[in-house]
Image: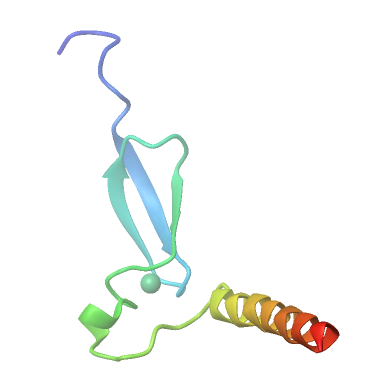
Amino acid sequence: MKDGIHPDYHAVTVHCACGHTFQTRSTIKGQLLRVEICSSCHPFFTGKQKLIDTAGRVERFTRKYAQAAEKVAAEKAAKK
Ligand SMILES: [Zn+2]
């Protein structure tokens, strides 16, 4: 192999948001790779319909749009 042109391909630990960890190899910087979904929690592999919302993203989404709906309702009320 030619020197200085190949990325450092090393062992890394993949840590999923569901708590599952496994070893793989990657060219990323550092020894730890954090992912949100993996084969032990993805619905395709688990057969379960529902995604586990570990990051609270669904909650944040509903909160955000609840605020927007309130604003629209307030504007409508002000126009009348
Ligand atoms: Zn996972």
